[in-house]
Image (cartoon, rainbow, N blue to C red; front, side, top):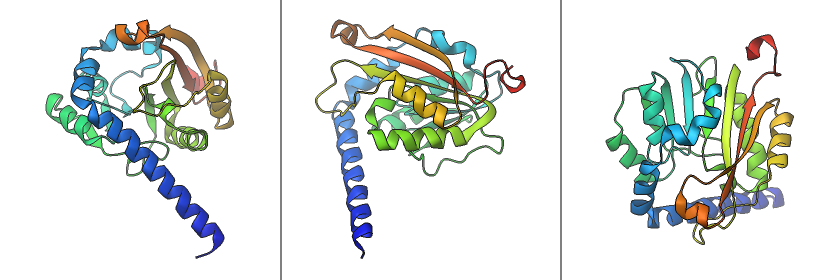
Length: 227
C-alpha cells in the first residue's frame, strides 16, 4: 500500500467513524426526536419555499428524510419520492407510519447518496432539511456537486442550515450562507432565495437557534428553462 493509499484509507475510516458517531447521537434520542419531528407542520415549515416545489407528478428526493413527514406529504401531492435516510430507527418508523407506493426508502446520505437511482431527466426537486450542517467542509463541496448533477434542467434545490447551540451528541459545523451560495455557483446552480428564519420548535427558538433557508435553481433566473 502506497502512502497515498494509506492516507485515503485513514480519511475513509475517519469519515465512517464520524458518521457512526452522528447516527449514534440521533439513535440515542430517536424516540423523543420522532415525536418532535412528527409534530412539526409541513405547511408551516416549507411555506417560505413552496413556490419552488414542482407541479405533480414530479420526481423528488428528500435528503435526510427522518421520519418521513415531508416525504409522505410530497407523495400525497402526487410526487414520486426517494426518501434518503441513514438512521435505521427513523427509516423503519417512516416506512411504517407513512406507507405509500410513491415513496422509495433508501439507506443513503450525503455527500454522495450512494445507491440512489437518479431519474433519466434528473430530480425536479432536491430537498435537504436540517442536514447540511452535519457535513464537514470537504464533504459539503462534494455534496453540492452531487446534487447539481442529480437535478433536472429546471430543477430546484432547497436546503436549510442551522445556526446556534448544537446538541453535544450530534456534531454540527458552523456553515455560512455565503460559503453555501459560493459552492452552489461553482456547481452551476443559481441562488433563487435567501431567507433567515427563527426555529419552528419552541425549545430551540428559546435557546437561540435560527435557520438559513436557501433555494437554488439549475438555470439562471428569468431564462426559458427557469420559467
